[in-house]
Length: 191
Image (cartoon, rainbow, N blue to C red; front, side):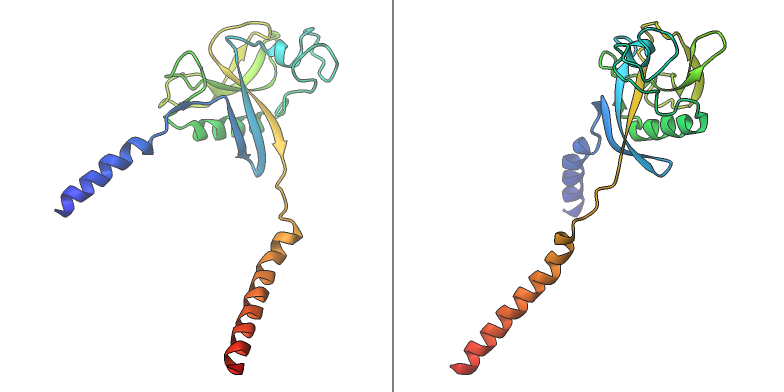
């Protein structure tokens, strides 16, 4: 009888244990001790230039119509980009994908600089398969579409401190319980 119960529980729990899903963003991803909100822009729809350098002059921070008017977060920081790509791939595991048109791809990229030929240097997983995760350095044409790679953009988030009122709530609650106990004891003693 216990075996049947265990099998029934396992049958009910197993379908909910794997939550496979398309991922377009990740909140509060820890990368080397800092936390980031990560947004993905697929290279089937957006180019590097669309995101960071519309006029292709290799200058960031200008109002040139780019989606972002700053340099990519890990620009010039290969080790940071590798850590970021690794954290993303670890988060995705083998059940989440980043391409809305292909549920078997988790291609992600973190841009770090330019190669001497003008292509963009990207660290990420381009194997495509959900289970085949390896971080490699590859080139992407700055103005080119295609490849189904989710270019990662990062916004650093800071830890939200707990307000003093929250820390005082516990002692206040204990104090109210103490007043209640004292009131009950006083009523019992006077009766």
